[in-house]
Every structure is written in C-alpha cells, then in structure tokens.
Length: 126
Image 1 (cartoon, rainbow, N blue to C red):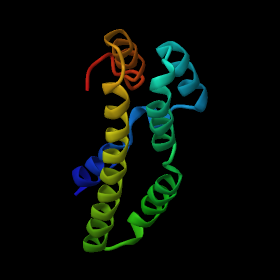
Image 2 (image 1 turned 90 degrees about the vertical axis):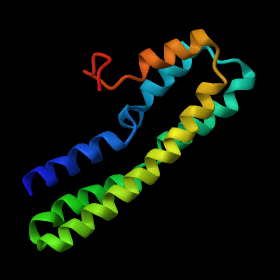
Image 3 (image 1 turned 180 degrees about the horizontal axis):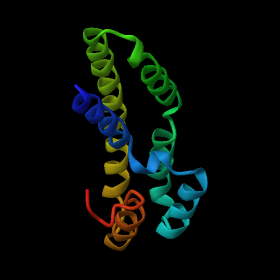
Image 4 (image 1 turned 45 degrees about the horizontal axis):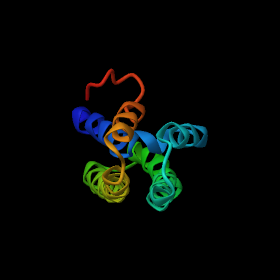
C-alpha cells in the first residue's frame, strides 16, 4: 500500500509539466531565448495560458494529500483515482499546447525549447 501512495505522489509530481512549476520569469526568459517570429506569438500565448492554468488543480492536490490519512483504503483509492484523472486531463491539455507551439518552431528554436524545458536536476534523463 505504501508503494501505491508513493506512486501516486510521483504521478502527481510528474504529471504536471515541468514548465508549469516554473516562475513567470522562466517563461519570460524562454520567450526571449526562443526569439519568436510574429507569426509564432499566437501559439506562444496559448501555450503560456495553458501552462499557467493549474491553480485549481494545485488546491485540489493539497486537499487530497491532507485527506488521505483520514480515509479508509477504498476511499483513498477512489480519491487517488480522481486526482490522477484530473492530473492526466491537465497534462493532456498542456501536452497539446506544447506540441502546437513546438510544431511551429524552427529546428534551432526546438533545440532551445528542448534544452530549456528539461525538469531541474533531470540531467536529460527521466
């Protein structure tokens, strides 16, 4: 059971895009580093809006973590299932925005994005 709860924590941590946890200054720096053309700005703006829209999810995640110790196992499992479903929905929305932006980038811009979007401490490994 401990392993299940550990896996939930890992899933919750990884399911939010690494970029979503970065401060706004990070997206500003990435924007500068990418040197976007005017025709790429609309995709950038959609990307930023989706990546930064995780406030409600963060609150639900914290509430779920506080509730887990007080619930019987079947209810914990149901809560974890709901939390992972929410996380996956957010991940898919972020993935779609990232892929749309990425598809419009030049190969040089894609290399910058790849380098700058790695999670801290990943060393390029997941």
